[in-house]
Image (tube, rainbow, N blue to C red; front, top):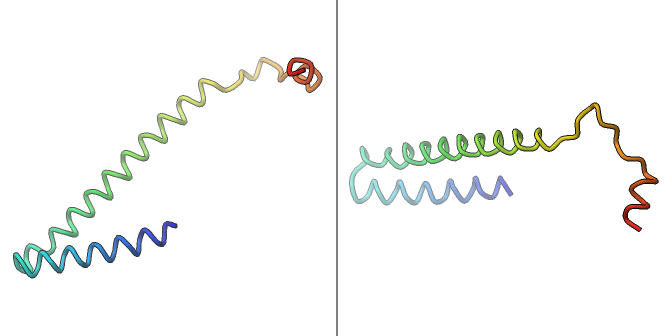
Length: 80
């Protein structure tokens, strides 16, 4: 799936830069790549921050090493 996204992104980027070059000149065509790079960087930073928040929250829910895990018999009787 990631490879499909890369291919689609390359096709859209080529189309966009070609359009910008035709309409505004070659010098402005490079701004398409600059904007795409900025969007990719922002997405990576936001995803990293979201993963860090999720990981930090999951540590708080972990069981303390001092507390023993419930036995299988206790979980079976609690469900029945």
